[in-house]
Image (cartoon, rainbow, N blue to C red; front, side, top):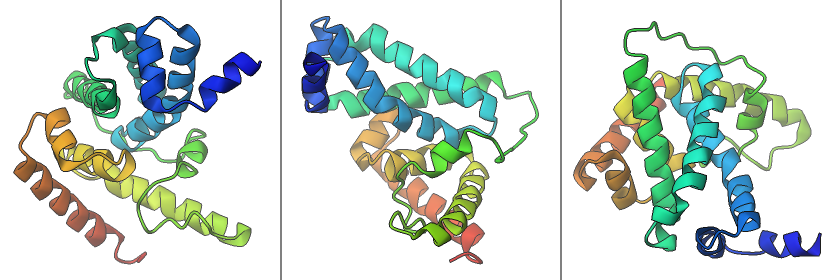
Length: 199
């Protein structure tokens, strides 16, 4: 037990390095640490709830299979978000001809709404009696994000939820920093417009 607990104290970079040296306990801890984040990202990106778990599993599988290909462990977050972005775009291409049904009432949402997110509308320190208001607002925010065009949705999630820099987002989405800044600004504008009655 004590052997495993030492991994919990390690930095992300240390876990990546050990995972690349075939340390499966380190890889297990790395995946455990990141899976909630990945699930949250796909939850805000995908309009169909049933796709979220599948995409999360696929992303984690790609991390486990390809961790040796990551040249610089410091770039793990960018590399992971590249995987998330690619899977999201693959999913979009697969579903292009299918109707887009948005559903936000799903048991998985409970976990997502409690995932820390940088949108200032959600106060993580809210008192118990305010929790239901926060959760309702979380659903509204999620719906507003799902209403954004894909290119705006991906940049706002990578920036606000995953905390990536403009440079990292440009790399993950294969665009320029200028395009990223413009899309984030437009995404924020659209979100503010859609949420103005709640602000």
